[in-house]
Image (cartoon, rainbow, N blue to C red; front, side, top):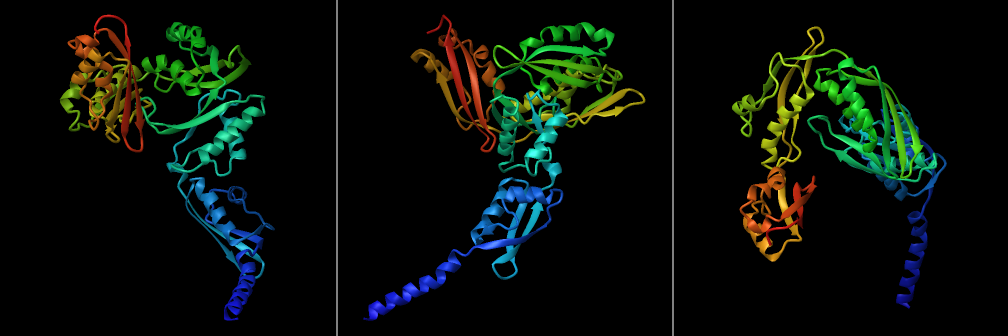
Length: 425
C-alpha cells in the first residue's frame, strides 16, 4: 500500500509541474537596447522574434544564439520581463566595431554595379554593412543572398567566399565572394581618356582581354598598372559599365571605362625601417627607387619583394610590406616609409612526393631539407630541382608544388607532383 501511495504522489507532482515545463508565453512587445548602428527590424529578423509570437523559455536562448552566430555582436542577452502569459522581451546587445571588419569584395558579379550590389545585399542580409566580422555565419548568409540574386536573373551558380590576405599591391585584408560556376570571362575592354604615350600599351591589353577570367579588381589592376608604372599614382577608372552576354561556356563581359590619369609623380624619399631579418645595408643594395626617380609602381613592388623574400625564407608566408605613401599634390612627389608586417611563421607539417622511382625517392630523401617541423620556405621549394642538379636520379624530373597552408595552425602540407621527362632513373 505504501508503494502505491508513493506512485500516486509522483504522478500528481508530474501533472502539476508539466505545465510549467512546457509553458508558452506570448510576446507582448520587444525592447532592444544597444543595437546601434543596426536597425530594430534587422535585429528581429536575425533573432527570429516578433511581437505576438508564442514561445518558451528555450526560445530566448535560441534567439540570442541566432544573433551571436552572425558574428557582429560581442554579446547578446535576451530576457523576459513582466508577469503573466504575455510578457515583454528585452534584448541587450554589444555590437563589435564595424570599422574592424575586413571589407567584402565581389570578384565576378558583373550583372550589378558595385553600388547596386551593395544596396541589394543590405536589403537582403540583416546586419550587413559592407564588412565581414572575424567569425560567424554572415558570409554564408551573403552566399545565399548572392545565389538568390543570380537566380532572379535565371543564373544558377555556385558562390563561395574566403578571406584574402594583404599583399604589397593591396595591403588590406579583404573578404572575397566569387562565382565559381558558371564561368565569367572578359570578352572585350574599351577605354577612353588614356594618355597618348600609354595608348599603345593599353590597346595591347584590350586586344588580349579575352584571355582572362573576369574579376573587377583584377581588371582594374591590369588596366591601371601601366599608368602607375609611369608615375600616374592617382590614376583611376570612372564611368565603368559591364555588359554581360551568354557564351559557349558561362558568360562573357564587355567592359568599358574612362581613364582619369591624374599627374605624374616623382620620388621625394624612400626609407626602410631595418629589422633583424633585413638590415639597412641590404635595403640600400636592393632598392630600385631613389629620390628624384619616377614614382614607378613596378619599381616599388620589386623593392618590396626583395624585403619580402627575406621573410619568406624564414616561413613568414603572410608577410607583406606597408609602404606608407605620403603624396605632395603641390610638388607631385611621393615619399615612402617601408615597414614589414610579418605575421606568423609557418612550419612544415608533411611532405608528400609523388611519382618518383625508388632511386629518385632515395635521392629526394637525401637532398630535401624542409623536414616536418622546419619553417616552410616557398622559395626553397620552388628552386629545389634547379639547385640540386647533383642528385642525378632527379635530373629527369620536373615538379609542381601544392602547399596547403592552414591559417589557424600555421602548418603546411606540401605535395610535390613529379613528372618524369627523361634521364635520371
